[in-house]
Amino acid sequence: MKELFSFVNLVINGLMIGGLYATMTLGLTLLFGVMGVINVAQADFIVLSAYIAYWMFHSYGLSPFISFIVTMPVMFGIGMLLEKGLIEPLQMRTRSRGEFVRMTLPVFFGVAMVVRHSMTALWTGDYRAITTFLTGRAFTFSLIRVPILRLLCLVGSLGIVGLLYLYLTKTKTGKQIRALSQNAVAANIVGINVERIRLISFAIGICIAGFAGYLFSFIYTFFPGAAGEWVPLLFCIMVTGGLGCTEGTLVVGIMFGLLDGVVGYYFSMALSRVLVFITMLLVLLFRPRGIFGRGL
Amino acid sequence: MVEITFDRESIKLFVLAAAAIAVLIIIPLTGNKFIMATSYTILIFITLAEAYNILGGYGGYVNFGYSAFYGLGGYITAILSHHWRVPPLLMVPIAGLAVGVISAILGVPLLRLKGVYFAIGMITVNFIFLCLVLLFPKITMAGKGIVLPPPPPLQVFCYLASVVAVVTTLAAYKIANSSMGLALRGIREDEEVAEVVGVNLTKYKVLGFMASTIPAAVVGGITAAYLTYIDPAVMFDIGFSVKVILMARLGGLGTIAGPLIGALVIQAISYALRYTLGGVLHKIIWGALLSATIILLPGGVIKYVKGLLVRRSAIT
Image 1 (cartoon, chains in turn blue, cyan):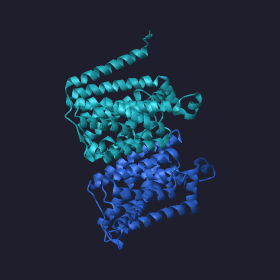
Image 2 (spheres, rainbow over the protein chains, first blue to last red; image 1 turned 90 degrees about the vertical axis):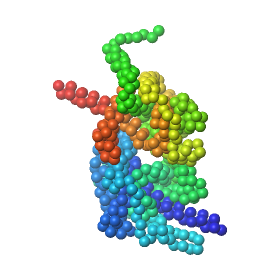
Image 3 (spheres, rainbow over the protein chains, first blue to last red; image 1 turned 180 degrees about the vertical axis):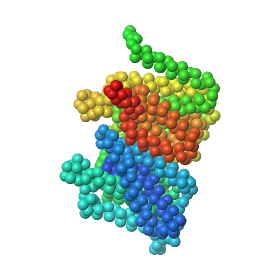
Image 4 (tube, rainbow over the protein chains, first blue to last red; image 1 turned 180 degrees about the horizontal axis):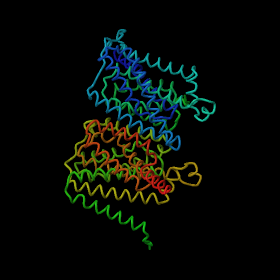
């Protein structure tokens, strides 16, 4: 009986962590789906946001529960700068879309290095964590525990996926973003300001990293190099869920969260990751459009 | 009987090659440790950039998981040497062979992926190897890393790296000027057309893949012996792949001189930054330079300089 409860707890935990995985990947999915940018720096922006939340809390006393009101605008701004400074020039200088897509990877690898090592230079390599009155607290129902902060992660991730979905399907700009993701030339012909939409969608993609960093800062201890181990996982979620498919990201994020929770507990984290990577390779080989098989 | 012609171009090339080989022979004789260690690293990167260029430059398949094969070579060498108690350098050929076989097996499905999907797939392969190392701590010592016996003198490594670099460069030259080079170029330009014309896609892609991974494994093995210690984070580092790709790109993809020049230039910059700035700052600048060069010099240095010369001659 006790085993059963511990299994249920693992599943609940995996579910909630999976929500965080999905939020962390969501920006990546949007960036790749709309612009074809492989943003390997996304995890570093997430850690940067967590740092911003941390310093806002420790220096200015801003409650970490609302720190997203700072991290998201900052990331939005950084996103706009990057789009103007890197994406646009790169696009002008590459011969084909394929080459552009491939070259975004090393470009953003450089960005990741700058972000990561700047954080080390500014704030040292010490581990940081945000501790609030809710840290370690949980709702308990007999033997089942639901950690409150992790529940917040799941709620937050469902919220942000829902918001993004509404934004993309209901607003004019959102529809234009989707049009751009389907066909940039046609979008230009029907009168969409492609340059502006690219700027906005890129900034939104990075902005979501700001939200993910806000959730991240509650759950994990972080240090400047923390992003390193996340990058491959986020890519696996993105590819398996379908490049540019937001619901796919949510579902697969939660799926991999469950896998990490259960396999990570009974066997080892390394095995869970190998399974994740192999799943991704199989999806890439046999269903290259992801398990849901459709775009944004 | 092979006819040998002495036109100016080939004499120039011959003189250059002779000078290069003379330098390679003299360097270890100086006995200066700094010079030897530096040239060892540069030679290693020349080998890697040239080998990478076979598939990445001629074939157009950008392999961001190149470090996977470097790391695998290093690990096979280290594991065999550790468990059989033999000098690691003797195990390097085995590592090369093993990686050749492994990449042939992996290449068949993976090379069906195109463009960015291939890039992502290869990154994943890199991380699968990394996780496999962590998964079998009894064999690989996992995160602790493997300590190898003390290395032979630096001169040995210098000569070895010279031989490997020269052989790889010559092999790359041979391949580039063979039917295989032609097939790979065809694949780069348009895979469907190449197939229609009768190029056996899988065969040439897998051969090109093996030609680029085997030198990486050999270099990984030699470097494992050179460093006498390896751990997964160093051997399976995507940053390492990016560096090699940048070298091949900066020089100019799909040429023989390109990767050579790229490796020299980038390693020189890398050293200069490390010794003047040190620590964290050099990594920040390195990251910024990485992004900037890719955006500013998409065709590589050779193409850029040629472009400048052409423009100048057009003006005058």
